[in-house]
Length: 128
Image 1 (cartoon, one colour):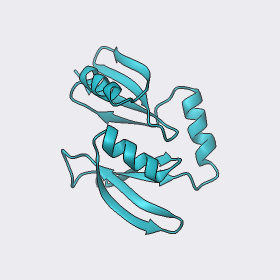
Image 2 (cartoon, one colour):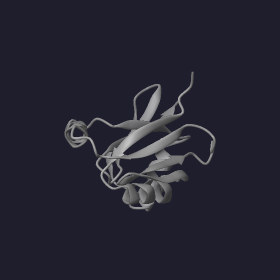
Image 3 (cartoon, one colour):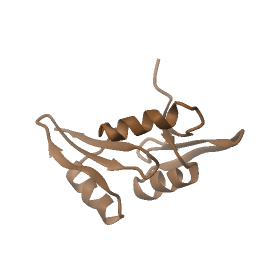
């Protein structure tokens, strides 16, 4: 068994696609109509045949309250690995990305938390 697709719930799929590709550096993998929305996935350029991230629309009634509760409590929706959190934070700030938590050394890991502009907090992490 392996993870094939995971998702992040977004308030606007087009805005999410722009942010996740233009700012975070993912590449679009799949984009097909799915009712009123799209089956829209991105992947890491380092592993284009690896795990896909579904930019899932907030169609379910529980989606918005769930996301709002996570943000209110400062809890990231998901986490992405990066080689160097400090360098990635500086790169992303240069692109206008806003952080709710600066790069923080927690001993075995360095983390930072960004706002994805689509209703989520996303954590970046580098294991030492």
